[in-house]
Amino acid sequence: MDAKRASHSPVSHHSPGLRAWLGLLVVLGPVLLVAMDGSVLFLAMPKVSEALSPTADQALWILDVYGFAVGSLLVAFGNIGDRYGRLKLLMTGAAVFGAASAGAAFAPGPEALIAFRALMGVAGATLLPSALAVLSELFTDPRQRSKAIGIFAATFAAGFAIGPVIGGQLLNGFWWGSVFLINLPVVALFLLLAPILLREVRANRAGRIDVLSVVLSAAGILLTVHAIKHAAAEGLTALPTATGIVGIVMLWWFVRRQLRLEQPLIDFRLFRDRVFTIAAITGLLPLAAWSAVAYLGGIYLQSVLGLTVLDAALVALPGAAVLTITCIVTPGLVARIGTRAALIAAHFFIAAGLLLLLATGVSGGIGWYVASTAVAGIGYGISFSVVADTAVAAVPAERAGSAAAIAETSNEIGNALGIALLGSLAALIFRLQGPDVAGTLNETLQAPGLTATVIGDAKSAFVTGLHAAAVIAAVLHAALGAFSLRHLPRAFTSTDGDSADDSDDLDSGRAIPDGKKERAAATSF
Image 1 (cartoon, helix red, strand yellow):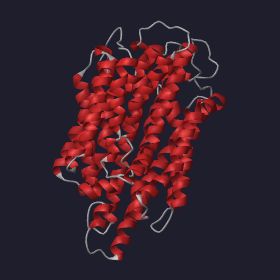
Image 2 (cartoon, one colour):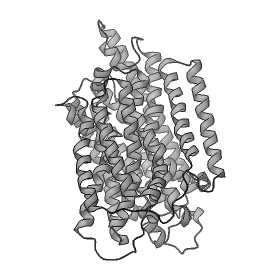
Image 3 (cartoon, helix red, strand yellow):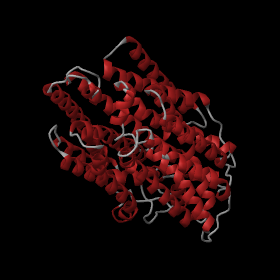
Image 4 (cartoon, one colour):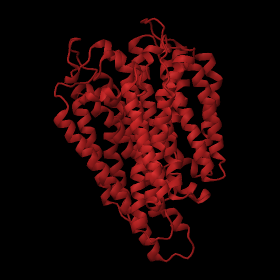
């Protein structure tokens, strides 16, 4: 979040000591957990479905309520940390995250699991902005701080990528709740070491928190998504339709309110800049595609192809490795080819990788699945690495914190929306084309007395839904890539490139000056 405001230590240029690097390691623990828990259930859902028997819409809520909670509250908790202290909020959030993880591990039914996942998301929203602000206190030298935040960003991206692999490995030897219990040792170690290695950080000026805006955004998103999921799983009925209308009205009210507030929760006026708009959409769309395909792919590998959860995790490993490595090498790549070329390439890599999924089928397709995740992983890694800096570079200096907050929020909301919308599309296709035994593939396969024909029809319907989700995501990425090719200014370069003078027209997308480079690094991950 706005780490520049949060740190009021004078800038010094000495090398950080052992305390700073140990503090970074301690902070990275919760950051890794928050990212991993956005994806750790992707391979675990077949096991969860066997144990808890959730309905189609409950299964989607188990997966994405966490992301919606994190994304809806990131900005609000950033402001709360400014006012009451980042370390205090970080400690409280970590404790709640650990308690909610324990509750989720032993949840007796899908409703309880959804509730605990939502609580984990609320706690996760306290951890990300506070952790970043605390880093600014540890690393006062701009170059060292930029390096530390780069490690922070790589850890966050890697957490998303390795979450399914970690979950699959755990489920090979333990029950489904183990994917949540692994959070507890990390949380306990953090609570023990944080008071020793980290110091409190507060902003010099804390903005007012508009509670109504927080309520409108969170409730509007959840009500609208609930209506979409219900319609996909069970068809249009009166109550969910009314719920969706109420949700849309609340979101409309939220946007109108932000445009009138002096200190809005989300500054929608920033979207007047086309570079910022492309960056924000790039923050959302790749996470949406990645999360939906990872979730549906986990079911495909286990329930359609019959792989064990360990084998499914191994199949997912190459894509996760490519994504993580790409995140690490992207800054050097951007320095050579520029941000514009990197953003455009990211979308076309993702589109190409997603289309490779069309070669998968009921009887085989593991090789095509691996190729798909590897090719798309290049695009995902690039997009995850450049979005926040691109967003900050596109706006005036005094609005850098708001730009970074929107970039962060778009990542989390994208992660949840991908499962909600593309997952709902796959559920709708399964309901329309499947054998009409149950609402999901896993529920259908658990029904007694199924014939080979019914099983084949169910698997075929699921694969059709997977293909449809992949095609729509690919088309959206190809369209955004083409739009970026046409509308991103050719002069737009990386924030690491040579800067122009301070009077550059921001809408032209030219390289930002050194002062803005430091601010971009201090406010993004």
